Image (cartoon, rainbow, N blue to C red):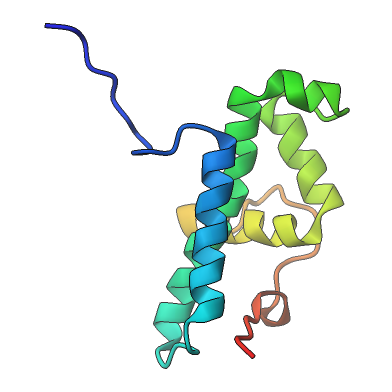
Length: 124
């Protein structure tokens, strides 16, 4: 019997697939009426932030040549630091994703912390 490939990410196979997943999550949030339940909103925003942040992992693990060709570090440590420094929206996603995973933000993080106004989602 041939060995089976384990799909840890189901049908997600590339950073582009993960970006499309994030786009679908955002579209669902934009098209849905405002959640009556704050917990539902929190979970939806957390899921979106985690998806967006993990694109950096996928890029570092599968698109190193493309990253280098555009002047970005090809390894996760360098890429994540640059993204955190250069993009406040992805910096916020980083903090939410790491905070959700570890229940606290990364202790070594030196930038401005996420505030409630950073993550306010408006459906209007």
